[in-house]
Length: 223
Image (cartoon, rainbow, N blue to C red; front, side, top):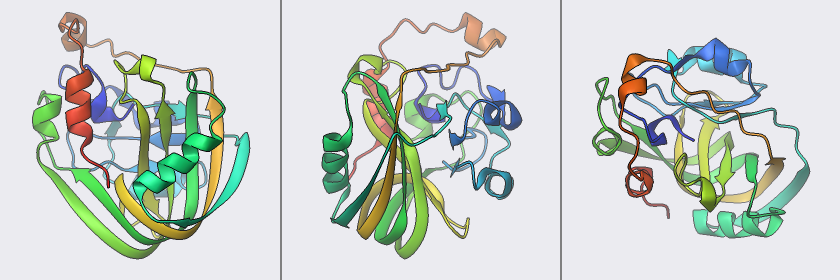
């Protein structure tokens, strides 16, 4: 559940303060819809990293106490499609959420960062202006989640990973990558905490529509 992908995006900006979110878990993916960026943080990095990334408030995000159930070392990853196909073989089930953390040095990585949008901007409009960046020989961590298809109304099914570079200078939604070797940690998540806003805008919003098409369009292309 990235912040911009929530079905109620645009109806209630600034849903929860950062310290509240950090109390729920050790893996964080965040979008502040009033500032530019799709940063992320991990338990080792959050105290330092989130203070330097453009986060003042967080959208509705998945957070997990990331204790790896399984760890793997993947070699010669040639693309996003290659990575996700391998991860599919490692996940135990298609019916539970899986938290993913990947560490390594990337030969090449392409990321996307949503540009600044005004409060109340709808999801598709807000994500129609996005900046893409390509980096080479960049060390960092990918964090994110695999979401089952039955949860498509609260998040895009499949993998959604964000990069945070080791030097804290780069971060965003991962579109493509290449790496010689990556350390992968997977954590099966059978308990999901979803914090709903209590703002007047959210309580009065019409959320009866199916947001799947808008979520898929906003997520963009991989590869």
